[in-house]
Length: 145
Image (cartoon, rainbow, N blue to C red):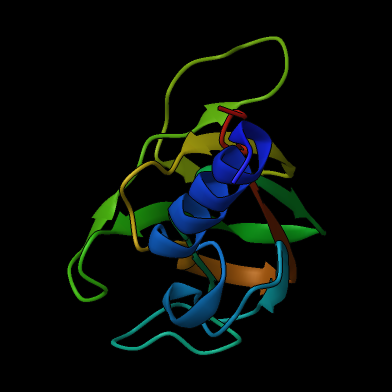
């Protein structure tokens, strides 16, 4: 085997072992998830109360865009085990870059997702309108060896 062939084999083995392909890949592999929230979350996520995005070994950030005309609040959350959700800090994109865990108006927010199994936006208060949530995963490709 040449050095180049060995390097390619090692990179392929690394990618397979970290879940980039094969059995470790989440069932939902879309990089973008969108939903319209129109009700307050009670005890389980539905398409009207949450937008959930699965993470994988290569995803390290999520960008959320919230649009629509609404009166309500969304909470950004994350989980390591898929069961216990906690509020997750996000940074609004724009002039004021102060950490927050909720949003009450349209805008774009970014969050670090390293180590989480799932992230979500949950409707935590709702009065009227439609809250349109779009989440997009991003990650780094492992460097060539």
